[in-house]
Figure 1 (tube, protein in one colour):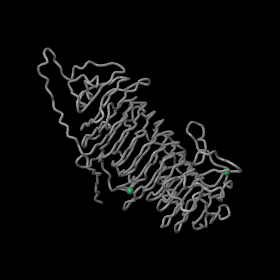
Figure 2: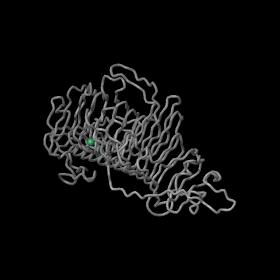
Figure 3: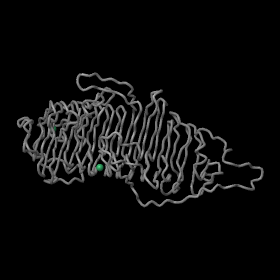
Figure 4: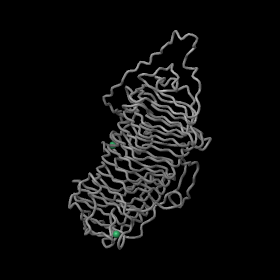
Length: 548
Ligand SMILES: [Ca+2]
Ligand SMILES: [Ca+2]
């Protein structure tokens, strides 16, 4: 048995010690004032909490009569349209929670007021710092949250959302929140080991129960900064998860799968995460865009971001870099379309300098009826200097489409630009076309092993060893792109990978690009990496840029 070394992010944190003195008010003649007799306030009323100048015997209804701690709020059932306003510069070493929900017209608002630093919620090692449980129509913004205990603990979280047999959980928004220094645990177990508990970390959302079909609808995490948390940056899961699709001639069966809808993760910065930066599960047409992932997988195995058990997931305009390879890691790549997924689309992402791989497509162990990955589309992405491989399939991946990507490496190590690996079986019917595979380093190669039905055509290869399974006539071999910047484009900008107008590959790609499906019966409009229409000129170009 491996001795799991549990590490913690241990930044020097200045914890402002707050002594929550129970103040006894004496001398208020005829006034039996205590925290229980605050008159309930109606819709659109507001509560104020100020850790410096507040007082828990106040009524909490104005900045001048703010509460000091969360003790009164914890006892409250809020109503639609209520707000809780936290004074900037405040620090609380306790968990934030309340009862009640908003409604469609009047969400409950949790936000900050005043000047200075974001109000900070910093319990020192509680199960969660901020709780929403069987509540809906809530918007949370402009907070700082930590949860740093003396030692790491199982299931420690920053924000925790839980719904059990609730039905539809509507409208939960988290915006402009910094979450850091949450010391949950990360085992030394491999990423593929399902004993590894990933449900602790920054923002964790869990659906439980099996009596009432329960899912999120309209769940947003936007403009948040999540860093130095263990194990996972953002995580969700659901008990309504069972479906299967046997590999050989089986039919798709939904036993209990109830996906969440309108899940959006946008413009977040997620960095220095012990394990995965983002795990997105059990959703229909979730959107992950304009996020930055940097230094994920810092202490254990894991790719920066992946979807699991989803249909029509769309990842676009994300920058994913520097995922860390530790000794024994199975995964340390950028993006991952994982198993139990259908119709995932990755487009306009930039994955670079990840320890192992740019994009992974996981079908799962092929003998499992629950292991499938169907029609993932990977198009118009830039994958640069990812170690070990650029694109990898593992296990039961079916009908993968990889087109119009730009793969670049000037690493001084062997790179498999396409790597098909077994997980009790191989991918089937993967198609690669209109891609640039350029290795300016040493030993670029293609590994297909026993994967079946590959179609590799209309790609441009340079610095890549020929492979007997890849047609030399259906592709351009030993033809290199000509960059506008000349040679050796720097990785600090996607713009550096634009091609000169005399670069080979313009207007000679295969025009038959497969539609990416949006989950609503339509298709996702196709553009190039830079927003240009496709095609332009006499035909589709090879690579991620479209020119006339
Ligand atoms: Ca790692
Ligand atoms: Ca063109």
